[in-house]
Length: 77
Image (spheres, helix red, strand yellow):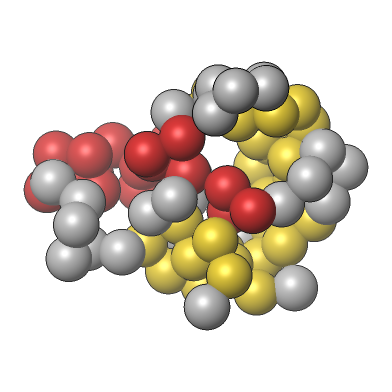
C-alpha cells in the first residue's frame, strides 16, 4: 500500500482509498467533498520540509494537506 505522503513533488498517482479506520468521520467527509475520490488522478505540487504540509492538485483544484491527512490517502501508480 502506497500513501500520498510518500510521493515527491511532480509525481502523479491515482487515489485508491482513504483509510477510514483512523480517519474521523468529519475528516473523511471533508476529503470526499474536496474531491478525494477513488479513481481520481492527483499530482503533488510541493512538499514542505520538516514534515510540513503537502500541496496537491486534483483536476484544477489545489489543496493543502497536513502530514497526518496525507498519510490517510492510499494511492496506486
